[in-house]
Length: 189
Image (cartoon, rainbow, N blue to C red):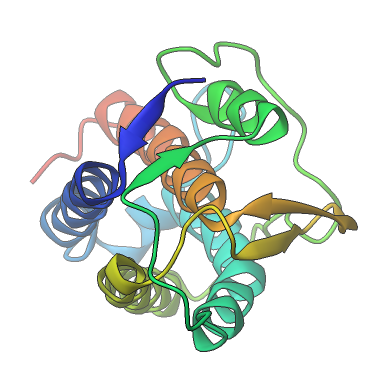
């Protein structure tokens, strides 16, 4: 668990979220609904289901992050951030490069096979824009001090910096899954 400059971490995370937004807008937004809803040829989720799964996490974490940022302490934020051991573990689990194991989705985060695909995409874009605005607000917050309860066990809390990294790694993981689905169906625009 290395210490990183807070500004450097937030810039890296902003760039990743921006990339996620561009991917969804360029690759998915103008697809036909049937292509967005088609299950993976390997039996996995459709593109819309991947994004609906991410939206379910955004539905939980974005309000929690917003509430955490609203309580910014009066003391100046730390210039550095260091993950907790639990935060580093969850991040490593979710990062596509280090978390190769597949995990079953938790109850409440399993997407329906019948979705309004365009509404799912619109919600994902809106959530990513909210996440970007929170990342920008976080420059004046202490990522080490603000604690966010995790969705699977609210009594466990992670540092805000860990929650940002976990969410964005999770988004990356499922966007890569959606892109693989897209390539398998050869419907790239």
